[in-house]
Image (cartoon, rainbow, N blue to C red):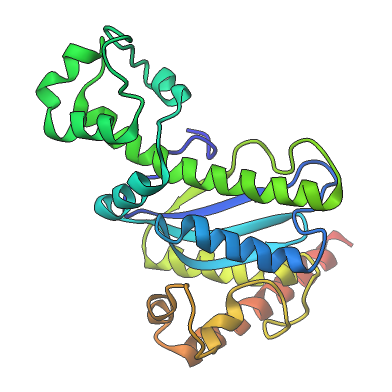
Amino acid sequence: MSDTTTPLQLDKYYHIFNRCNASEWVFPQTQNYTYFLSQYKKYMLRYWKTYAYALLPNHFHLLVQIRSESELLAAALEDFDKISKSWFNNQKLQLVNEAATDLQNLPDFVNLTQHHPDQFSKHFTSGTAQESYRSLLQWIASERFRRFLLSYAKSIRSQEGNHGSLFQKIFRRKPVEGLDNLRQVTLYLHRNPIHHGYAIDMGDESWSSYRSFLSRQSTSLERQEVLGWFDGVIPFQQTHEQYVDEWRHTKQWLIEIDQ
């Protein structure tokens, strides 16, 4: 399965990333980084838990966990009026009588699948209530992020006086399973600005979440859980520094071999 079509499942962790098209910039001006984070918080905080991030001029990375069924559904019932027709088409759900009801409305569809599953076949020619409801929750998590990206891109296009798509069409996502992999992705994200030449050391002022874990200021990140992965602040910092040092040593060694 492509990492652009992997479904976002409840309570699972994912490495989310995307980049701009061609020679575009995701963050053409410094204030755009702050705006991206503020809009991300507005759009996604109730849908995903966020563990780490790295924002670079032409791409970004996120480490997230999809929230629980009850959290996701409560947020969606506030933010979503209708389910897109494309979702029904992808699920191959055809209404028996399209004039009889408007099950494209999110509350109506949830009510049917959750409280009247025995009536599902009376309205649709294929599929089951359970399968459709599970797929709907996955769509909600993905669709909310897609709308966030569209909103952000529209603001940047207006700011820069440009047109067309800012981001690559479908954001990429990879499941992250197990503590070792969660630690590894966190380290990778925080090293990313150094890797691409936008920072020299971990402590540099750069648009990653690294410094937030060394701070006592309030944050929307799952700070305590991440620090727990590394057994505290000091081991967190030491592990990151060692990770960067080892990467630099390996990189230098590879260059010498090539010569």
